[in-house]
Image 1 (cartoon, helix red, strand yellow):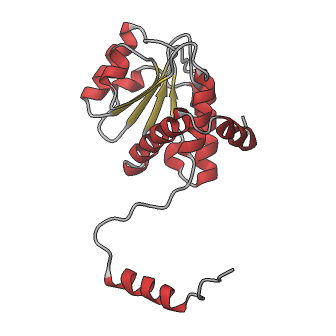
Image 2 (cartoon, one colour; image 1 turned 90 degrees about the vertical axis):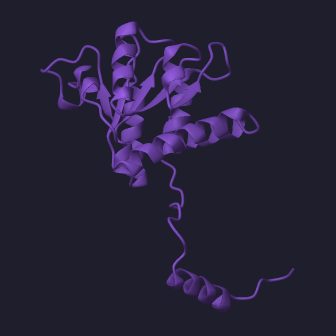
Length: 200
């Protein structure tokens, strides 16, 4: 889905809670990876690998100038002979630590072995985000969850498009600490030199 289709979809969804929910989730995702300098791990279930979301996040990372958004796709059936970007197996979850973000995308509750690895990564300090499951252990243990109920107006793939597009949106950087004298002086100079507002 390209930027034009995402914009059209956003117009159609105006007034629903989906826009705010996906932007909030994407903001949490972006904030987590940017504040830690990257380390985004993306995993799905054995039956549902979010490779499409991985590709969109790589694109958004390039377009937005935020390389931290580019994920490492963790796969259930990765083989050493696979291309490097597809050869990362579940063992990578065991190495997850503080400063890394683990995004789990699944249409339903993942199987117990994956939940155990995800729980271990969370206990080791990784930030856990859940996209998809409405109930169960995964959304309960996640730091942030965006449930996508079965039978709702959007499917999981569409929500992933909205999240990836929102994660790549450039926002003004948050102000850190008190404003410095030079910042206040610059703002005053801008106000004094700005043309007067026009009246119609």
